[in-house]
Amino acid sequence: MQSPIDTLTITRPDDWHLHLRDGAVLDSVVADTARQFARAIIMPNLRPPVTTTELAHAYRDRIYSALERAGLSTTSFTPLMTLYLTDNTSADEVVRASKSGFVHGIKLYPAGATTNSDAGVTDLLGKCVPALEAMQATGMPLLVHGEVTDPEIDLFDREAIFIDRIMIPLRRAFPALKVVFEHLTTSDGVDYVREAAGPVAATITAHHLLYNRNALFQGGMRPHWYCLPVLKRERHRLALLQAASSGSGRFFLGTDSAPHAKGLKENACGCAGCYTALHAMELYATAFDSVGSLDKLEAFASLNGPAFYGLPVNQGTLTLNREAYTIPAELPMADTTVVPLAGGESLGWKVAL
Ligand code: OTD
Ligand code: ZN
Ligand code: ZN
Image 1 (cartoon, rainbow, N blue to C red):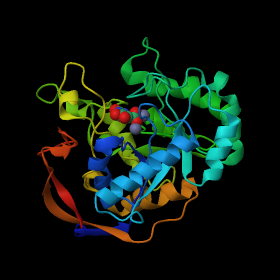
Image 2 (cartoon, protein in one colour):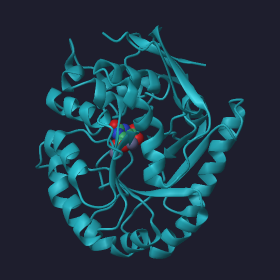
Image 3 (cartoon, rainbow, N blue to C red):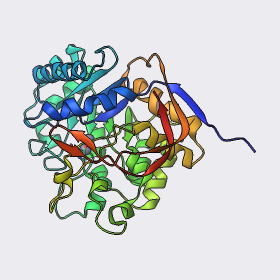
């Protein structure tokens, strides 16, 4: 029998789906990501949303300033900016973004699908055709929150129905468009991404690899496990784990780390989002280790994403040790606190700093 791996050194990873927020919150979370990841795709769901290259440039400057205030060098971490697609995004704006060199994707939020998505798209294949044509022509990836928002549709079925209603017609109309199916949560999504023709990939969060929907109700309501898309059944979790560790280049790491103040999560109408930036690689290592696939973590975390986005692989490495690690129960965030996912619990892996 092979002895278990106790130390794992991989090429420095990237986070292909991250919410950094803005203002004082940005200051308190940016270092957690920069400590583990060399780059991250920065989601644009601010209030107001980041809808233009100019706004993305200003946001990028604020991220660099926050890094400096956190005592980190601005060369240690690169924010890969995105724009928020609206019904009014013009082809010119897409061309500007593409020429900027710092905008790496345009994000589709079906209106109302998740936190700060009210300005999102109401009719993708009706209203967004000029933007989609320009994206296909310039090679600008479309990053997709893949859930329908129809209130008639059961919350747990919204990803599967999105595939039929939006993804398949979209791919048929724009076969060369690069598409990232963000935070995949179902076996339906896995099957679709694995088999679809053309440039399609998906990000997978650590929480969807580690937990099924029972986690939301473990001994009572557990708001810190509530995110969108919501956790699914065990069979979906197993399909995601299989896909992430399959060696397929179509699946890569995206934490979807999304901090909310403790009081807004522990609330009669709690916010959606899990904070995982602090302990992201520990969570992913735990998930891959659970199926004996630590040897596949590097491709998922460090190689597949750059290949899809057409970016170089990072210099440098990150080392994880098999070592007991207790996740802090709470972290300071601006003038409040944030509860990291599984705060207070222990993991068997720790990033060596
Ligand atoms: N999901 N929360 C947030 C975003 C994501 O859909 C997402 O990408 C957020 O708070 O920004 C969440 O549950
Ligand atoms: Zn989303
Ligand atoms: Zn997200």
